[in-house]
Image (cartoon, rainbow, N blue to C red; front, top):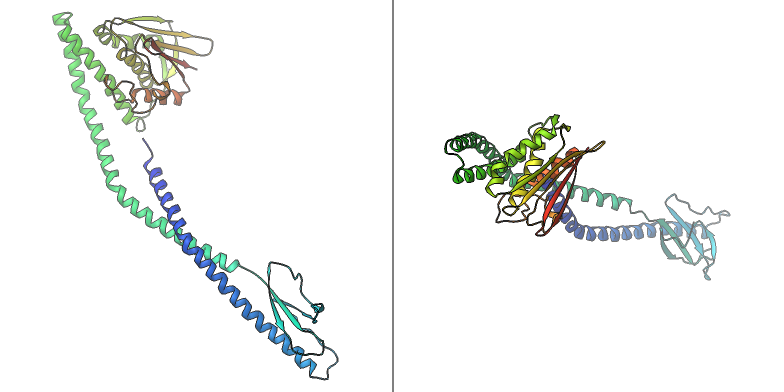
Length: 372
């Protein structure tokens, strides 16, 4: 099942991104406005400082003092220029620097012959950037929290319904288990009483199909809630048992099964998971095979791996790449929920079993499982 929390947070994240993008529009105007305000304030401050320097120059020109101390500041740099724009005295670090803001101030007649006073101040947008980041973080936080609570409230009914539905399926499957067992037991009794009756055989084969689907659903529902311990399994005997289980289905379609099973092949595997692999593969082979054909099952052991092959003479598979997708059905008329092979693939991936599928339309399909 898809992680609902992951889906919730994906929607929240997407909503936050959209709203942040929307918030950047007023943020853009805010930053431009602040930059203009800062530029205006800096010009006023530069003009004020230039006036102070100019007043000191004028006072010195009107006084009898011999030595002039040019005003200095940690914030402002200044210089005076003659009528040809040549520097008379300069404290400017770099007149062409784009990191500074400059102001040219016209001077009156003075003892230095200076016509222009230039003052500069370093430009700093750190305060604007900091304020913008704080505002943006507050917007993101508020949007995230509001989105989280809104989505949480909106999905709560669906979560409750999902829990209810899951519990209902579990209870329904638990209630179905006993009737299925009773029906199968009674069909075996009727078969023994009336001999090889075709109606009883068809009923048994239909019930066997139903049992496979039921066991798939049960595994699908309980796979995350129940531990599946591994045990030593005689795979040779296990394959024989599973084939015998499907004999009624095989006989109902007059399908022969050609078995080539090496004896005493053992494997450390979960019995429930192993049954899902074999049962689903044999069940599909029967389901999609024509009447009076043959299914081939072989089990061999090499030095360090075991190979299980199941081949049919059925209709084949149109698109092999999709067969392990959940709810995919190659033939909607044949039935099924489309979860059997998805379960098989998940079990194989979990246990490091390599699965290979080969199929030719109207010739048949072959599933190969390689167990380490």
